[in-house]
Length: 203
Image (cartoon, rainbow, N blue to C red; front, side, top):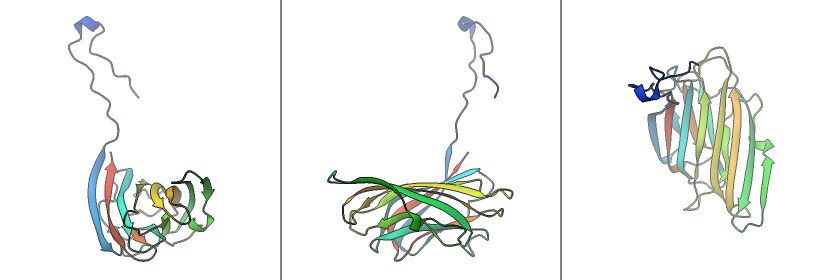
């Protein structure tokens, strides 16, 4: 990378400063709001325009109790959501009473060369005040040479046994050299009762 310098070498005689080097900008592409929705599908805006796409989740609430928020990709603009993927899933937990804390791997929530929907958050409750928030990053989905990597971090309220905060980490790749051009989110059962998902392109 070239070093930016002023247009002359005397600080007292500077007449112009170099332009700033800007970082990546988040460009809002689409917003979807759930209302007892069986699925939320993003079937446009995922293309070669950006090398990174970010989904942001705001107060996602389910109408079913103790279910997973899941997602899958498509290579045919949403006609099918069945791309082969391999993933990992681990989490950290701390309860409200400060009596329990742990970090663990969830072997039942990962996938190995599977076309199934991947859990992003496990065990979401449906109490009135329970919800999740977080992000999913999808990298270079239009590339036709390499697999398509993704990383997700989600936090949610959790109340199986001990109510508390649970932070869940998912990473993996779509094992395809075809372009991923659509993404769908759904609960493993029931509906996405409320919440917002926003899609950004990172320039």
